[in-house]
Image (cartoon, rainbow over all chains, first blue to last red; front, side):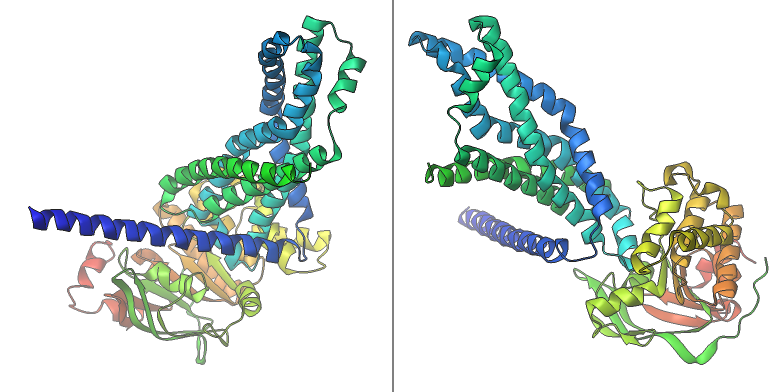
Length: 267
Length: 257
């Protein structure tokens, strides 16, 4: 019995050891992947056409979903906040509350989460499929640079496009908030807009922009890393798509916490 | 089309391999391979599935790193080659993949243009169009220029895959299972195309296959890969003129008599 128990413990320990080694190996590989992006993305020749095409793809892929979600977030947040403010007779603060919540946190976060699902998974699956069907190898053996053409363009596209989408989400959410406020409190558009921008500072806009850039970079690099290093045939493609979504979402939340903490020092 | 016997220049190996070894985990796939590919010849590497044939050409093209051995490709020692030199060298080597590896998201035209515009700086639109039309004509598929890879048959995909490598005028061609998954008639057409490429572009080729018809129709020389080493090398008849129990069944099951 003792021998069996100790054998199980040894097995568990070696499994844990292996997991730990795998974790640090993966961390090293991700680090190398990111460094390679910075080494290759900003040296000529630039794949400008492909970057523009990818920006368009990222925008188009998420546009409808982001429009609907942004609007709903605006309406729901306004609706849910009203009872709490009503208790203190402070419904007039609703536009300010909505704008602070949306611009500081919700717009970048909601955009990033939707983009992780739509764009991240698509990048992971696309590159994963290219890897397992040897299309990436075909690019490599023809003297071209697949990393530059496939990875750098996609990461730059998400990094550039997510902030634009995030701003758009914010505006749509505020529009949703306005429709709800105007219906219930009869507030005019000009009064609403004035109250929306009153509490917002330069730091809010900059922080929101930085957040969106970081989220965009994360979604792109995670999707590309998962897809580019995909193995094991079609099973690997599925894993790459899934891994791109889960990892990107997790990292987005972690980054949100860190950036909120850092920006709070500047307020 | 009957193969025209080519005169290979045996004093001039374009690829030279000595003592090549490659393992995956604990399994030794290549166990000390020696090989020379001479200027202008078609060398067929025959062997069963999983014997490391594809691994061999992936090492030659720099897609995989060997565990040991010395490889010289077009005068470059692959162990000492820099990244820039490897990129330049790859332009001189054409690689036709088993599953063609055409870029799904691009039309045939874009597939062909892709390596060209990235490797020939300052090339004009007119020159690109001429090059695309020339290689499409060489593989007999001019009409597919605006089609997507998903609209092509298996044989057409193979031809376009070969055309994509030819557009850079390679000196060496590496074919990975060129007839795998094709019907017998298309196989013969692909074999003819391989011979045409050899004649027209004056290439030296390594053809990886387990298809004896392909080997017989395209090979100037055959190298039989068994147990991680080349056991028999020579002309088709020389290789199969044996009682070796590892070689005989290969011949018998391929229905060539």
